[in-house]
Length: 173
Image (cartoon, rainbow, N blue to C red):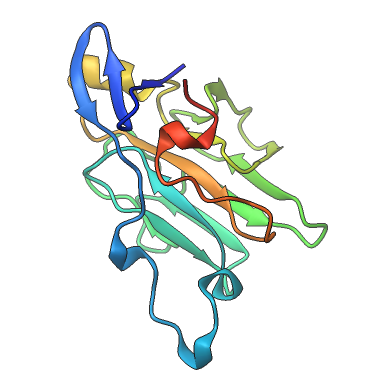
């Protein structure tokens, strides 16, 4: 499990403490017209666990979100040799289920477990998505600072709270 102290900083006994506050920056909440709330324009967001990478809003106009190196993806991941052209896909299905499917060479991990290639899995609010490494800290220990990992936040329901940091998500102790 990833451990954070009370300030939202990731701690590891073998690594120096690393800032991992995933609070959305002020620019993450877009300007919206006609007083429409962001929850009506977006069905969720991916909070980056790597401070070198951006948080991503998931717009209602795109129910299928692909991640990968190719410029054809909704989320284009640059500067990572471990990420496939189309690494994985996140989809908001008509049934209301959100799923994630791996299509990569190096694997997609959902809350630490590797997804079987080509098979969908349910993506729930608060789940961790990591491309190519089950634990991003292990990638950092090996000298890899281009890791790609996100915390998924589902905005489709009003009762879902949006944690201000990873430690407030309830997924991290």
